[in-house]
Image 1: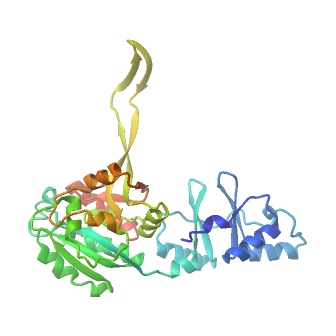
Image 2: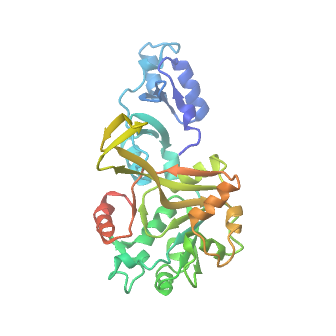
Image 3: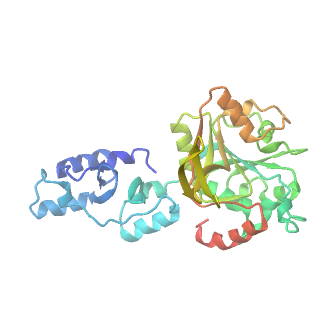
Length: 350
């Protein structure tokens, strides 16, 4: 998605001449009309303007007179392939991305067709025992359990590849040979795969200390190998870079309803009563972006969890950001999660 899509937004009172200037400047052949809250009102293309001029509309009249008030739209969760198919079938070159009626992006056909090559290292944690999924994991590591027709870890790998990532590192411990035999060096997918082995479990952050010294000096995306998600990893990396973060943690909203009425008081006097209130928390989604400096702080064979590593960075006044994910996300830790994944995979476009 273009980093400058905001430059295509104009108000309904803008003139057709101003819309043309935006179209020419941004070279996107269209402008998006929104109100002050960025609610989508319509889109206008070069063709819309030409048809308006042929009908006698002046360049100094409101763009609302020539805009398309019922444009095709998509959501941020739409897959790259879905966007390409929609734009090609409707013969349009760009499409607004809408969430709750608000414009949150603009995807162009050119961007959808062009897949960048991203050298950032991707670190997939695949060493767990998967004890809660026994007996399925008695003779198979959890990352190789199939969801649909592919292993969990392969689905994750392909999702990264779709975004243009090519450098992968996989941390192993339980049945490492099976994982290495299946994925090999990555040549099957046209990517590079390197393995690290934990002699004993080092925690979610400790394996960072086993990574080779020739790791690309770029922010690294780290992810638990038992998470099924269609998060756009390029957006995650863009967020991390734009925020000049030292580390970023993906978080997910979690709602908890207290099963009782909650009473608040002051000096014995009741001040409010709320029946079975719902509280919203942000939980760790098991996906991180970390800068090279932070990776270098982890000593070889040091046992440390990622939250502890990030807490150290926070205490050192580091810039640790959280990236809320609203896309599909499932931690396949229990048998019921695995069964749910089997039902969900057919609707995810993964």
